[in-house]
Length: 243
Length: 107
Image (cartoon, rainbow over all chains, first blue to last red; front, side):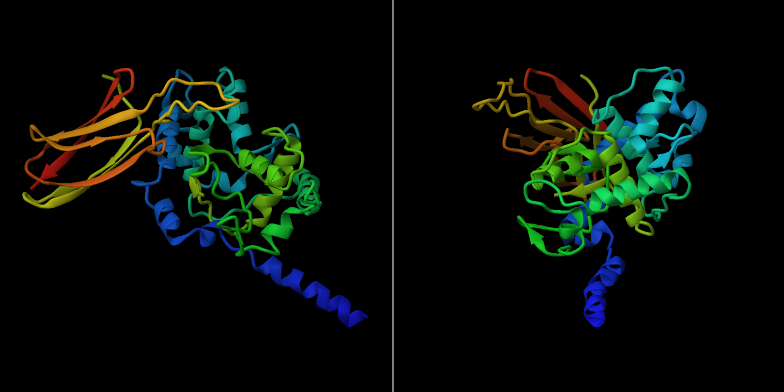
């Protein structure tokens, strides 16, 4: 009985080791395109984001200086703000814009916010994810983990049943990856445009016929934190290119 | 004539007579005006042509159609003749023209 229980646990231990960067799951052509700014449409948003960085009387640049100083920032998000609110990169930018720049928020999924997030995240390209999960983030991380592990929707699937147990297998002509958020915001060929991780998570919810939560909802934010923690040590790929 | 977000990739410099690759990707929704049950009809708005001139001559021309993806990517080659501007001109449905320039240094 004891040996049987141990055997059942073994695959789980192996899976924890088996997480690979999202780029490993891309087709060779898509991977080459993701690495080539002259052919990757996501860089059009990066260009726009860098222009927004410098725009206005109280520009991002006025406080933060050149955008090059944002190197490594995306590896540490989502993060808990001083008031205890969990913010992802988009949320942090929106808050900064409203509170410090005195401008109306761009709105989640707006072209401007996607561009600015892509421009900031791009500065962390290739750097290892290392989201802090101590203190206030610990409870939120557990919330995200619970969401990841819960069976959901009409198909009664948990995230891990696809992204751990069946990673590397094919689903509807595509390769199932480990489901890390490291490439977002990403240019997705299916969308024909740039989109956020939350938009992608909504697509996953729809795929298992579960409730789709709103962009920026607590469910997706805590899940994003868990995914970022799962991806620790993996390189940031934003702007990613996805099928 | 207005500006448009585009990435034009040329070699930093080229020798006279050298064949050079030119890559250009442009941000545009290429709205095909799709009409169908349950959808709101939209007027078609695509970039219907791309014309490239260099050293006073047209070196590339392409008709783009509504079947082409958003943010279209085009790659072609031309011959390095002289240092100067390569001018990219897109025509959009409705008559708008977008123009971008890239500089090629010929040694």
